[in-house]
Length: 151
Length: 159
Image 1: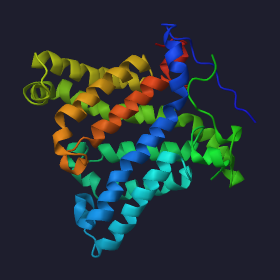
Image 2: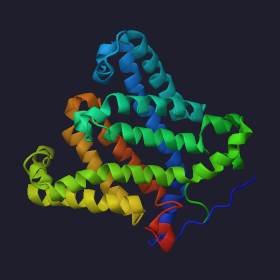
Image 3: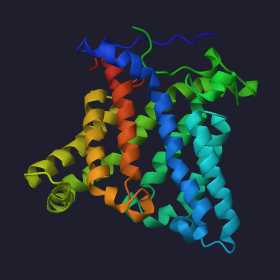
Image 4: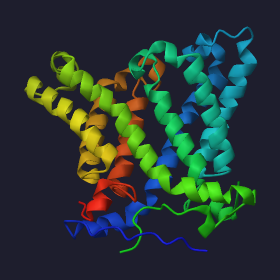
């Protein structure tokens, strides 16, 4: 079944249509790729540096932070790669969104809004991107679509 | 010209492993692009408010604008202030989406690479990753335009 989509308006500068036509369908996949890719350094940081490497994990005040850092690091590294590639997009996006919600309510709300003081501004953007991936799945350019199965 | 943005739902291709979720995906999927656009705009907007109404424009004119090497500082500070305030409102509404998103992408690129780059990647150390992600999102909106739920689409005209 094919979804009918209303046609996009003609650009005011018609020459731009030639630029938009190849890149516009990539916009959603590009957003998903960037969201996944930006998690990868965080996962690597937690796996290589342990719990002490991430001051927001330290701020959780866990009694035994090492296994949690390993778990979150694995989630962010593997999940980031899978989200970037669009593999099991929705389950991965759900797990990352759950992690972000936890961090927002446990740590970042106490730092206010501004990202520069460790506030909610940045994790809210990541949460929005994970929720968007959860809502729409991998989309046209994803391993999910290539495999032909998705959650 | 047909659909500009890939706003298709799983119903046109892959079958969900849990068929009961198809209805939810069909409802929510088309909103995801506008959702990210509105959230991105909403996260930039408070910066514009702070610069316009709480003296932030003079703070950056004496600080980050000079650090980034722009002159005259006060003129650039006002440009940044007005771009963040009105630009984020327009981006959220999807009005003149592409020009506004492009201007914001340039601003975020300068913030990422001229101001926060020296602090490294991680935001815990005031690194560049947040400005970089905002820049990449604005590039996505420059490529994708307003999409299905935007003032641009309502007006039937867009750049």
